[in-house]
Length: 598
Image (cartoon, rainbow, N blue to C red):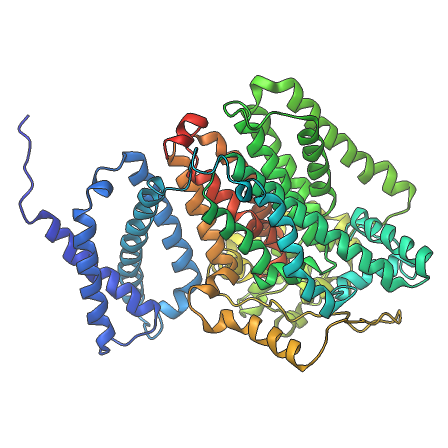
């Protein structure tokens, strides 16, 4: 068969429309008018960059799996962007034909941008000189980096402890404190195991000084030491793999200097230790994977104990941690099938201990479970969106909804970004009837969605988009010291003056003012980065390393299914803490020989 030869100007024929569509997409995304000079400059920039990209031999000669994966992820990112920002992108367009054509052209432009960036990212990471097998063998400073990480983190977090002593306590923390002192009934709404851990240090403080602040301060210090130890163990993993000093120092700085990390280390939320334990569990998984090909990672007793401890705490410190563990378990057992006895015993130990605590132990201690409505955030938000948007509802269906909630109050109560108001509205209705007729209401909810798909889609996007779309502002740094409470608890800051107050204000305003840096405070941007790193891990050829991503992927999946808030930073904090580990997975290409090849 005769091969059809491409014309000499084939690349130019592709480049011109691609640059035009990319410029069009950016103009609409950035709300720049078509008369603005920036539109022409963007077209020229994409034209020149695209020309250089087409000449880049490493990109053009990259393996097919690189190109296919980059295209798949580019489609995913384009879908995310169009889903979240469609209203702004289509602003001013009323005709259905114009709207469809416009969104298609913008989508093609975004696809071109994301594809080129992702493929370039994969190629760049492949050649990144991160590993140095022999250079640092005798360096005492390098060998002591894990200890440096531990103490440097504690040192950098101290000002936050001093200015918030005994720690930051919000409504959630105070609810746990009320249970500890017997003012509130025991409940697993905030994980009971975590509450008991705080109570343990509270009782030590009361015995030592008869002062609750002492015990709460001891818990905060304990949390700081645990988290610093986890980060030090990750640094030790880098050192054993001979990662270059500069990269190790950047990772240490990430944990020690980023303001939200420092603030969260002194905050009494379940999410902090939960996130740390998820990271610890993920590090243990990577070390188990490396043990098969790298002599620096033997499966020691301490490694197994850390795995057991982190797995147990991940399951018990937040309810979705248990579901994430169960979702990860089949893949974990499959990946370690050659060492199935050890891993079956380890994971069976985690599972049985968690079921023991969540079952007989909590029952004996009369710990109440969260109410049924608490787990229905997303379903509630989708059904409520139909009423909030004023869509016509069948009389029979409306009567059935009215049986459990006052539908006349939904429009004024509904908030697209948070389900708390709708949950409270249902609690004011007949919640017992809902629990007794779960199957009937599940059928109604499905039927309702088929009748109002647009409202359900809009409701879902608004209820979750902070986790998967970058341009959603976060509330970080607004909580400090101890919130008002009926228990007489007051903060006793050791460092509190106008200078420290101003410094704190500036530190947490910088993300709003400094481009690029602000992306570190965006859950959506960090989620996209994690997907890109998972893509790079996939194309690197050692796909077992994707197992390290699974616990956080499962946690994010539970947020997409049941988050009460569309952009709560602490809910996805484990993902942010794991980013340096994910970068390491993306850079690894196998065992010791492949690592040395870098």
